Length: 148
Image 1: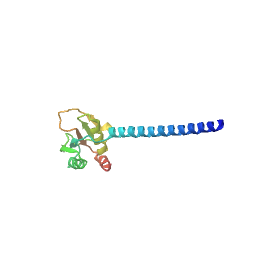
Image 2: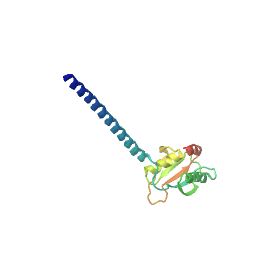
Image 3: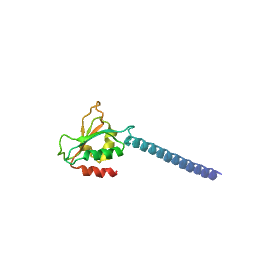
Image 4: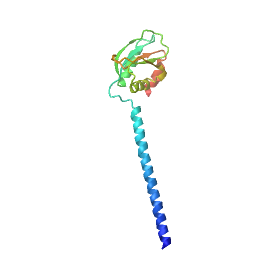
């Protein structure tokens, strides 16, 4: 009888260990899932409204700002103005950030395939636009971003 009780205790201990391991795995998977969904929501481009932009042409190519404005409208941006920049020899396109809102900036960067290094800060809450986009001679690189 003593051997039978030891076998039962061993079986119960093994079963207890298996159930404990099962609950640990379930708990970790739930934690990881919630952790990822929290990070995904931080990375989301959804800001709850249309991003207001001004698009300026910094090249000699006529109509370039209008073409990019049309593209941005297709991507649900609110293009409040398109026109020419003060110079027509801008080598590298850039963004002027007027709000310092990371979600807005991230969406603009992703949409136009512009690098973070091409952002200038000019925070001014009184402006209607969130960002000003200046299109430079490298505009064809921005077109690559249109497929993203």
